[in-house]
Image (cartoon, rainbow, N blue to C red):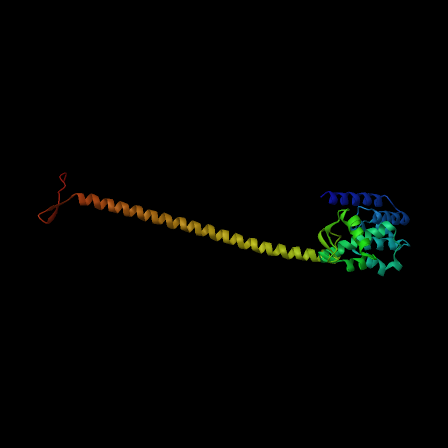
Length: 246
């Protein structure tokens, strides 16, 4: 939670700075500062700032492309497009390697050393493990276990990266489908509750009718008992005692 708050604070800080700037060189310098900051790992919100759109169509437009790469890309992507992008400072190169680890961790939780060394442009296992420990785990962006025997890094936790527009659309579609399914399930549950309530009410009515019948039967039996007490039997013949009041 503290890490998320720190990200939000940094984004707010750089957004405020961008709003106060007007020239393309100043904005390009701000992009350089943001992509070099050791604690900032989210950049998509900066991409949407109206101020930074001023870089488009200028000689500093490549700074905007670099910011987009830091939001969604990897070191491998940078190397494929390095001729059209600004050169990386050491802090930027380290940051892009950290972001590359996060991207790899999104697809699998067991990252082979050979793959990591290739993606991060690292020449040996010692250098790779030092980077994973000092620049990734100590910074809090990932947690995991270094397995030297199997030559892999087992990821237990990895911070999420910015979602690309396609990923965001897919997520919205998935959530919409889930919402539709939830609404349908809720409707079915409500119908079952209504059926249960109706069934319960009918059972109550049947119970009441049954109790009323039992009560009527008790009354009828009581009347018969009263009549039988007035019955006299003499010599095998049954007679009824007269009503003396008549």
